[in-house]
Image (cartoon, rainbow, N blue to C red; front, top):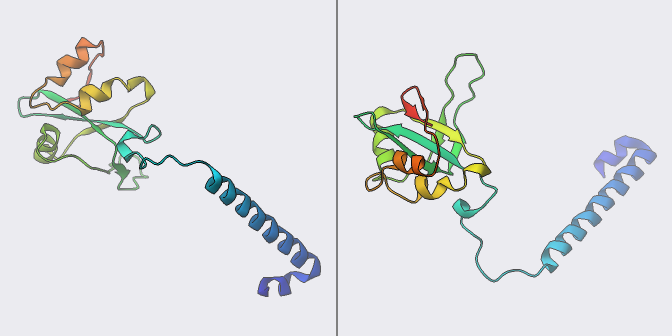
Length: 154
């Protein structure tokens, strides 16, 4: 109402109409969402949602043997706007894994965003431990070529 006093009669009427329209639209949307049949099961955890970005984290051990893992909890941690300035990301890793050990020791990793064509790799890279499985060999077995950049597999 305070804003309407400064807009004059025409502005106040159009503002009130817009507010009523938004209010009606909101009620319609809330009604549609609430009236849908809901599945009784709890929502799926974030790592099982299809629309979440999925990354591959590459590290190497002291013998320069590569390792790759899956990460879904990744967030930009710096705004590197100048050419040549480093970009930092925050990446959540499980402890007691080869990836965690390598990343802590070297303080470096290679992070790459995967696409839907890489979906079959999630089982190899994310559901097996490098302590028991040679992930680089497994990737070769399914026809994935592993290249190296700055000493890291990708």
